[in-house]
Length: 419
Image 1: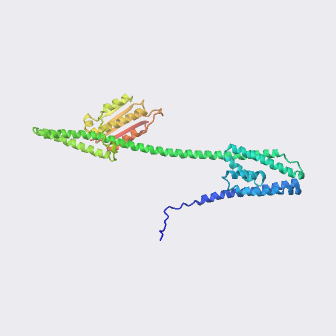
Image 2: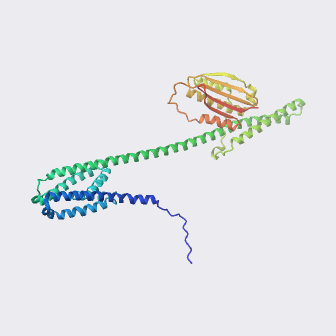
Image 3: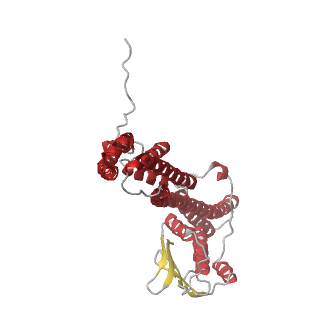
């Protein structure tokens, strides 16, 4: 028994509104042209009968019949052939000999004009003038014995036909230009939207990279701090192991130093594990990035060499407190340096107020500068520096915030746990 075939791909159903709209518009166009062409034909038939009489009408029977047949065919075909180049050209040819086809001829002329092809437009105008001139010249020669009035010269009729054709083509060209402009604007809007989306994705990738770099930087600084504490432990433990003549007071002091160093190393190790909660790539995992611990004075001197005018409001951290937390000291000094660089970049001529305050179990760093009156538009910033400050503070269990204040200043505040 043949296996039953199951259909896994859903069938695509046509939107009924699209199919109905696609059939309704051509049908309405054809019906409208038939409705307008019939009275035009009847008016022309009556004028011809009044001009040449029944005898002349009998001589023009073939022409009038061709006018009716070609006109009806052109009006019916003008709807379905809306996108056909040669189909619309044939409809214009029918308009040369048929008054019934005049509405369909106008629609076809407008469509050809929408293509905005100068050579085609000139060819249509020339063919229309020649065709109308030849047709009316033949008609006048056949009906001349029966005409009661002198007809207009064929060249005048051809000129009027060429003028009307040119107007129809110009109308279509205007509509085609407008449609092309709208399509171009829509394409530009779509391209701009794609560019904005790509820019947003790039910006998000830059933020992730900045956070990743800050985590690695914090981890490197903490690695230096842990190494320092372990060297203290090794030195004092080695002294205890190799010396048997130490006094009890010296043994207690060395044991206290080992205990304090072990506790600080454990705290730093916990911070390292927090900072490295995202994996580091294998290529750079084995590289050691050692950074010398800078002092507060070196950071301020470096900023001053860049032209930054620093005003120290207060500095409440002692040398012992700086040395007791080497890893956090390095991170705090890096954040201070980044804040000073940011102030010097965006407000180079404004004094920068530095406030380093000691709280109960934390340190508060505040860097403030007045917002300049004239903003240098050529200075470009990515915002990664301030983002890095926030990331470092968060990894160390603190918090950071930056932005303009109510008194027209820009402030960067960092609060870190400090024991």
